[in-house]
Image (tube, rainbow, N blue to C red):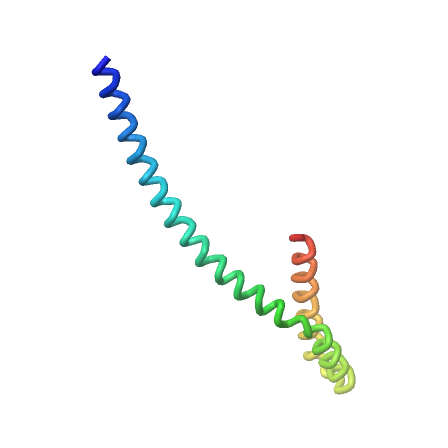
Length: 94
């Protein structure tokens, strides 16, 4: 019975060491993931801060149309496409 008890104790010690190593790896992985998410959160905060973009785009579009600057209109159309895509992505995440 003592041999079996010793085997169980040894196995338990091995499993505890394995769990400790896995916890360390998990902490490291979550720290790396957290750093990546901070960058994403900063980007999202910029997008949230730009909620006035439609008003600015309208004003810039009017200025582009009035000045007949084709380059400005093309630039604004690209910006509008990016903004609308980001808005659709945001809605799809909900």
